[in-house]
Length: 270
Image 1 (spheres, helix red, strand yellow):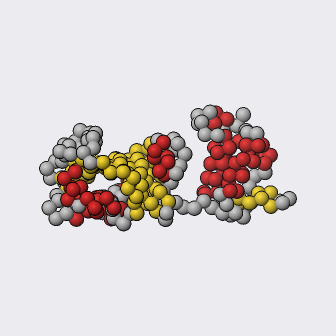
Image 2: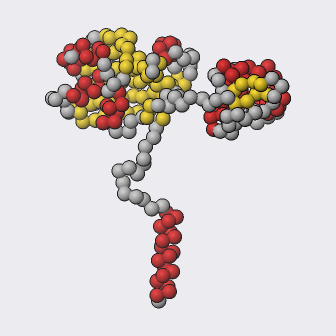
Image 3: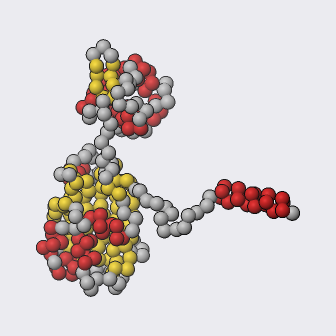
């Protein structure tokens, strides 16, 4: 029994995919660098505690991805690294959020006026008189990366329905001179793709997604924009300087050392 044996049963993902994921991570992390010969079939079979056919399937998958290449009589070698698809940096303030979606390429899947209202959590404002529901898919380099379910205050939608139909709604709202936004609540969670989302994102049913719930509230306390966005799990990353808005902060260890040094100086002076 190997260390992986008790882990396999926790997932319904086929064994060869689980093995391939571990091997892919070794390439991504540099544990197996480009040009390195990976472990032999016998070694992998023993390490993972699976049948040789499972190891072969995992290697075939990595070969199809262009990550490994077999050389007759020599073994299997790393021939590349997985592409970095994490191009989308999650916004941590409202202005950067608006800028990040301003030029998004989207395709409207459906538009429904007088739609059923969204469910608002406590503190997310009050409902508008009516909503228009817009479903869309956003693309990057020709590939879908998110599915957006948006409830938009119908009064706003009717003010410029043509633009709301063909482009991202939030930048348009911000540009309205008489619009005052008082709150924008954003919640991220991990979800799974339902049949419709899986079809639109071209992924497998039940694959993990990064889900964003965004509620924008105006100065009347009305939730004018309520969106549920499902992102591909591997398209984004969160990068931010946690001290960007603060002065340099000295660590506790450094403070302790400084105090000791000061105490030592005082003792010498005494």
